[in-house]
Length: 205
Image (cartoon, rainbow, N blue to C red; front, side, top):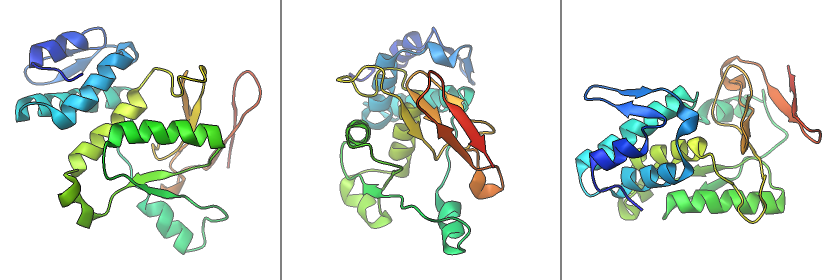
């Protein structure tokens, strides 16, 4: 599952990017395979040495950035809810203590089955030590999820996940997911997706 050398990793992502000595040059972030994303996720966390883990994270960050995927925080939303500027909904926080990548994908599958709403994954600072999950690990897991191009729910081909927590200037529509976070927490518009037709429509206020 994991890459065993930097060369093997570099060769695996060649359709999407070239790993150079000083940068990762992304030519087509959509060309990276789902298998490569799986292996990058595992190597970023469990790679045999610091160079392997660091290179996997470096590649993931470059691919994610080229695809418009950037780290974000829910902190401002919580502040807005405290000021009564947002509300009327809850955002369950799921404490992930082990197998973060596999757990996240399993939760998405279950959420689809249950028709669940928005949720986030979190871990308390006090739990980082004994679970051996550092912030680096969790960041790369999130970005590999967003880069994933395969079936979100293998038993239900064609499943599309609608999600937030990845602020962009406009909604993002991919074959397996729709991102609707347009940065309302920082002064951007609030966007919702209208589903049911052949293509989604968006309402922005």
